[in-house]
Image (cartoon, rainbow, N blue to C red; front, side, top):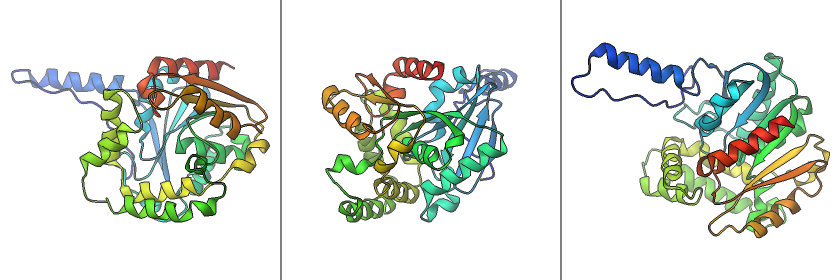
Length: 305
């Protein structure tokens, strides 16, 4: 694809509605979409959709997730900010392009840095969810001038911590197995698997429905390789060198207790120079879906600092 297109709702045309009215309704939906009037840049590893005017904000979604992850906040942000929504090629129905080869995360960081330089963007507020949070940390480490502050939504400097591992070597074989298992699903629609993924990532039925749809649209070969790279990328030793303030959004709920989760995150970011934790209850991994009002409030406060 030459241009990434995020799914946008299209109004049905009930029987009896004049064609002109159906077209008018379609135009209305298009111009009120959170991604309306956006400009899209397509690169080998990522696409970036820019909209709005003002101070820069970069939004990076997580594994198998499209830029639509941020649809709930994109319109409001674009009223006061220049908003850059990143999407990994192979997610959201996009062609995988270079992401069928190793180097997805590093490629995303390098291309995002080059894109921001081309746009003359310095010191952006960068928000990353899950794997997108890891990419945000990688960007701050490699290109500190790109980033003024970081909001990390439910992500660790190394996800291997959740596996009880101490070193990357301990999860290397498991990471390869997960990569291969996920890649084997390519071209084989499996709604039950997509729904199971959604059930582990959100608490609310409407949130799970969106996540299942995104999982179904993702190229499983890209998802598998990205998961492997996420699992084997360890930034624990780099947290202390990141000078930008880090705000960690920690969702909790269900089997994920607040005290237990907070202990894990505070330990993981203990060496950060500037760290703040914002807890959002009654939420799964996708806090922006399960608790949109609370997430928007946290994001607004983050940008106001």
